[in-house]
Image (cartoon, rainbow, N blue to C red; front, top):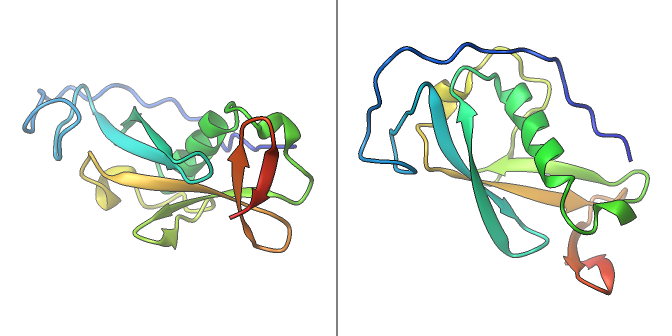
Length: 134
């Protein structure tokens, strides 16, 4: 299982003040970081995290994939399988290095991380039983 971390770019924290309705709410920023929920389709749960608003879409996708690849079940990941990050039922392009996160999202949105096999079939993970077709 080889996950590419993508290009390594370090963004300075934003100097703007906190804005928005509150932590984990739409429009909220804390030092240039926005909250985005990542739904794991194979597990039926979400975990959120702060992401720098100046990340490109490609960098964001690579960070989400790197994060979810530490979950239970990924030690059984097969060659040819892949994780796709989707927003509004459309895949986010992991090779998009022009559009920034803040141009596409305003915070508090949910993206979906989905696992597909080499045939493009959606997979779920069941603890103790392994990966199975959705």
